Image 1 (cartoon, one colour):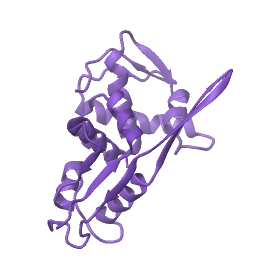
Image 2: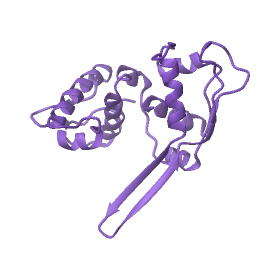
Image 3: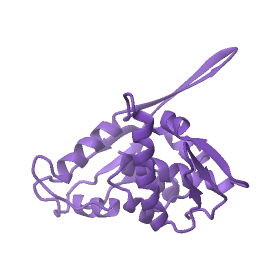
Length: 209
């Protein structure tokens, strides 16, 4: 779903349109995501199709709390979609066009708050949801960083570590995050950071794009 969102947002910005097409065949679309089409119960084809249907049918809800009250906003990812690809013949060009009509509020949020990311760098961490989250956050965070900033692993765990729970959750999260950061630095050599005890320190760096 993270790769799908990045691809979708990129297409929205490029086309400035709510109607986004997915290409003539499933294979060509998966190639754009950096995925290799494989069949079978656990293959990438059925997994991608299921995740597309889940994502495009979902709502995003955001709450903001203050001392005097609260605000809530919700938006739908899609107002509608059509997927006409053949899972049996992923190379086959379809007669009808597969596309999505993104929700109007979702479209407006994308156009007002966009920033560039690199699909090439994402490919280095595409198998890791945490790696994708860290990259999309870091490339935005360092774009306006003027001096070093220290962020505790507890803070980062609160933002990105929902999948890590239990007695040693923060420690396990930090271990996995450091592993993904090392992958990112290989793909993004200008990224400058250090991991002294208990925290991540970011230094002013050139953005990834």
